[in-house]
Image (cartoon, rainbow, N blue to C red; front, side, top):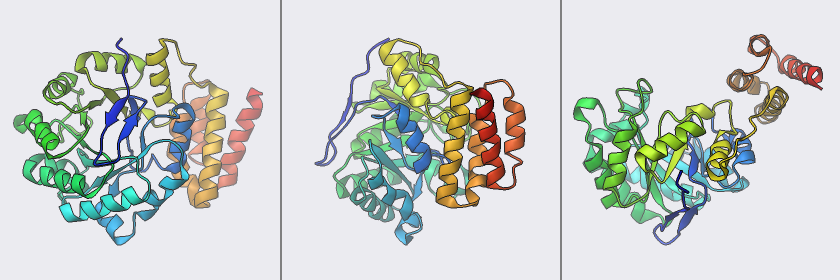
Length: 330
């Protein structure tokens, strides 16, 4: 296994260096400030992202909180924007930079219908000229590095990811993350790491591989096939905020990472729930349900505990359930 060096991004006057080659993907409805706090516990130097931000919402002030909270965090935090209007993307990028974004990522890969049908996300895969215009204008407007996340194309029949990626590089992108599926595939099928390898071979800028990386074994295999400069972990980290740190440590140290046991998972779930309640009030319980369902797995009695947790109607019931489980394990 080759040792992955730091990734240097010159920016447009403000350079950045990614010391950790394992990156946490932005996840809508998941990678909020509280989730990032837990990821950072195991991966202090990894690049994390806010949840994806709609440039139009930021322009109107609706998505501002996601960006303003950057100043409260330690470690590199990037902002990922989506929209199809170059001028709106420029305005949003300037706001993100002034709020302390480590870098600015442009999403050209989100397959969600309500985003793609409005011209954002993966819809830009069908319009290389507009995609390049957005990257060019944003790159000129801010000093921090501008990166882009893409897929292999809109569908298999029209997929030309190498020319598309080369166009983005020429427009000023300083790093490209490639999810090894098309928009049409969504998250079905198998991520095409060989296609990512072709993109990597064609570009001069760093390439990050994304898709189907669930553990260190997957990460090592993906890096061997793609020759990428790093990897991005996405859905596999839901319920496993230690995953980025685990992969980073196992690749660097060639030593097995001690996965959290039942006691630590329940303790983490309880801490997560209490933080959400503190921030969101009683509504925090409804946000926490998905996290409780994801995290409380892999130990004896987990199914029964999850069944009770997702049916807890008031916060105190959920807190009591977790506290009682912890007492059993002490």
